[in-house]
Amino acid sequence: MITLPAGLELRPLRIPASIDDADAADFREMTRVRNIVYAEIAGHDDHAMPADELLPAYRPTASQIRLLWLAVVDGEVVGRVGLDLPQEEGARTAFWLIELRRNVWGRGIGRAAHDLIERTAREHGRTVLQSWAEHPAVAGPQLDAPTGFGHIPLDHAARFFLASGYRLEQIVRQSYLDLTGAEPHLRRLLAEAEEAAAGYRVIQWILPTPPEFVEAYAAMKSRMVTDAPSAGLDYDEEQWDANRVLEWERTYTDAERHVLVTVAQHVDTGELAAFNELAIGKDPTTVTSQEDTLVVAAHRGHRLGMLVKCAGLLAWREAVPESPRVMTYNAEENRPMLSINEAIGFVPTSYEGAWQKTLA
Image (tube, rainbow, N blue to C red):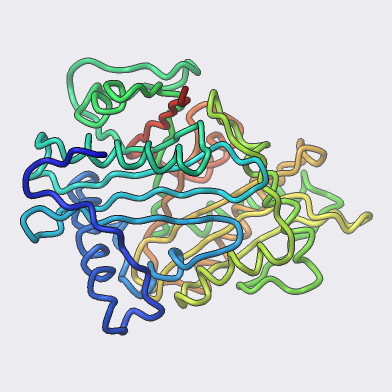
């Protein structure tokens, strides 16, 4: 049994079929509080999402179970608790979040929520727990990443993780690119990358993925976990096929989100060698998210990362000219990708800690 602080309820959240259904009120309230929590931490609204765009990401899929609870104190929703369970055969990992309004910190809610997460993860046979948290810069003691790249303040979130038995494994940099006036610089960089990438061509599409590229795209997506720098994080390998790509795409297309995929194709073999994704919600005036970028290991050394990023950003300016800026995340030790971003004009703005605990 989990002992809860007085007045606290951790209420399972049912995922409605539609945001307009009679039973969707809890999901809408969860989204409202989610957006408030992110703004309290980050100091801006770039992470905000409307409920109808968030809902498709929480529908059941074959590749992942997503569990959600509302943190309710005396009838008021003050946060949410989430646990994601990948469904690969033999999966050991579970990914979680606890997001609470600042005015209820220090009341034991986070500890009770974590007890629920750990118990549920054990029930599903998971032994590796991972979570990410933004750590805004503040003066005072700092905690260095074991990779040797980056540090975060020993803040409220860091103290919670450490007291709960977690180890800081990696620092993730959040960066922004101001798109205003960026086009001339992007065109110069693209021309240089095209010269270095002789023998490759750029192909682009808006989701859904054309059928002739689905299998190759799935193969590249499966390498994101194993090929991107992961420090000491213990990941399960992901298995991607055509069905999983279609499943992933529906979280965007059902939300009417706009996603541009840019790939580099090796002309002689037809192999897809690199890709980049840009995404935005239904409001074209909001921030753009640069999501996965990968250069396949066998094709590195031809400036393909710069090629797909610049080609994507230039096409994006034509497709979504009202979006003012792009945000992206990279491991602080991922110097090759950070160097590309810095050359393009991305500026670091904040840092996240990647935390891990192995259960006995």
